[in-house]
Image (cartoon, rainbow, N blue to C red; front, side, top):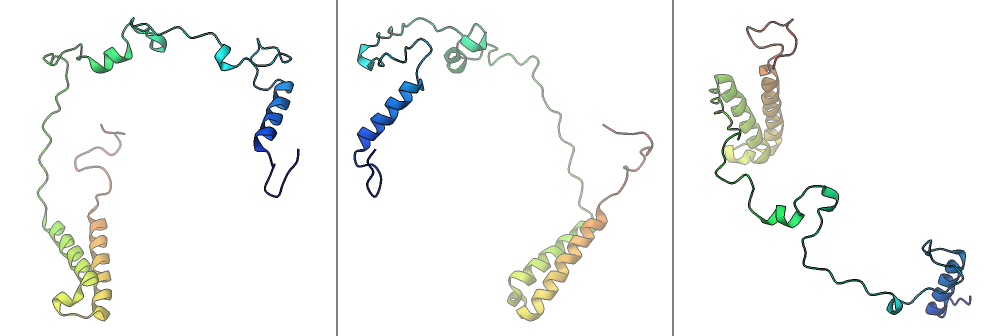
Length: 163
């Protein structure tokens, strides 16, 4: 192979030489091909049979319904068949927020206001930033103190998992 500065001078000839070497070693040949025999050109291959309009076999699915029929036709159960459908129960009402939740929300909003725009309430950033961080820390601490530890009231703690 003759190579120039950037690679082979004749790329097509070099590629053909590499392919011929690989074919001689048996790379890319099918088991029924003879390595000494040159490969057939695509024009000499036998033509494929035309696909028929008949219903295709279900194939790997093993069922009796084709993919197109399943995807594009109506649901065999029908839209009027409500028997056996799960209807979830009404969710319980949200609990009423208590006084502690309003206090946490107040500290949180005050902390954000002091961090983002302390000049709205007539305070400079030098004093607003530490007070805003302190207000946010207080809100987070109050939230963590409100988290219940242990089983709900009235439950037996030695009863195991509750569903």
